[in-house]
Structure formats: structure tokens, C-alpha cells
Image 1 (spheres, one colour):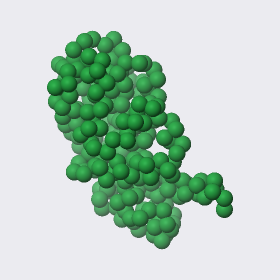
Image 2 (cartoon, helix red, strand yellow):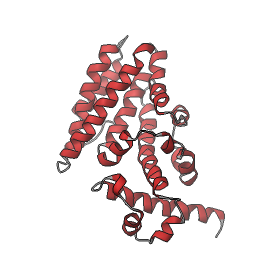
Image 3 (cartoon, one colour):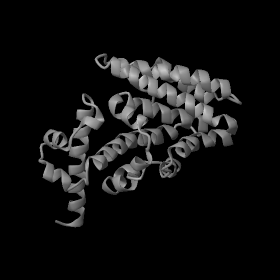
Image 4 (cartoon, rainbow, N blue to C red):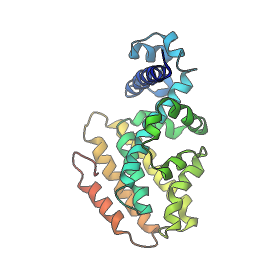
Length: 242
């Protein structure tokens, strides 16, 4: 088997097991999922799974990065629509809501992790298996992803907004804390209303109403682009604004 075919097989097999974890996580607590359950759901035995992952922790890390990579790709696409740093910040939150509210149990598990560094450290290994995903990221976002410290990563998302005069540097930590508390609370609410297909749409709008409210309290100058963004989300019915 040549190198190209070997890479394709590795990517395909990784995808089978990642998709199995995602499917299981929709009904089971993430930390209760076993390797045997994943292997069975993917249609392979445990020995085959061990050919591609060292252990369950690595598989969970790859699964979380896989879902986050969808957020990064969509955020990159949204950022091409407007050159405003505040718009880019909102675009990252919109992409995160779109993906995480579809898989609240998986993202709540990540959100509640005390040490997220172990997940971020697996990003280079994930991109080595799925290089086509990294190629879809814009340079700024790609550089941002390399940060493995969760606190610094969140700060770096808002830093361009500070540089452009939208927020003061001393308010960044308060903005991060408010958004994180809101996001975590909404994930818990969604898990209580999983049977309603409109739940992800509804709670995306709820999230952005609150985000709009508390970011405005810290905003140092107006941004017509961000107001248009908020209005798009509020009018969203069956599709997210593009």
C-alpha cells in the first residue's frame, strides 16, 4: 500500500471511530463510553480500534477536536464576510453555538474539563490525520488555535477587538467570564429539552440576546456590522445566517 493510500485508510478509519463516539455521546455521558461500545458502534473489534488510538482518552480528544474543527472552519468562512474584529468574534460564537448546541453532552463534557490542555495538545496529531481541515482555516484563526492555554486562548479571541478599540483590555476577563457562564448554562438547558428540534435554534437566539446585552455594556464604539449580525441571528428561523 503506497503512502497516499495508507493516509486515506487512516483518515477513513479514524472517522469511523470518531463518528461512533459522537453518536454514543448523544445519549450517554462521555466519560461512561467504553472502547468496546465505540468499536461495536463503528462495526469493528477493539483490537482494530487500538491500531489507530492509544486509548479512550486519545479517541475522546480527537472527537472533541473534530467537532471544534467544524467551528473553526465555519468561523473562517464567516470572517471572509466582513473585516471587523468584533464581527469575527461574534462569528466564532455563532459557529460554536451552531455545532455545540447540536451535541450538547459532548461539549458540556469539554466545557467542564479542568485541564483542557491535554485536548489542545492533540491538535497537531489530529491535523496530521485530517490535513484537509487545517487547509480550510484562515491564517489568523489557524495561529489562534495553536495556543494550548485555555485562558490565553479565550483572551486572544478578544485581543483584536481591544486593538481596534471596541473593548478595553481591563474588561476582557469579565467579557470572557460572562460568555462562558452563559454558554455553560445554555448547554444544560438544551440537555433538558433534547426532544424539541427547534431547541438549538431557540437557544442560539437566546445566547446572542444575552451576548448583545452584556457586550454593549462594555462596548467603546459602535459597530454597524455587529448590529447587522445580531439582527440576522434574531431573524433566523430554519437556517443560520451565512
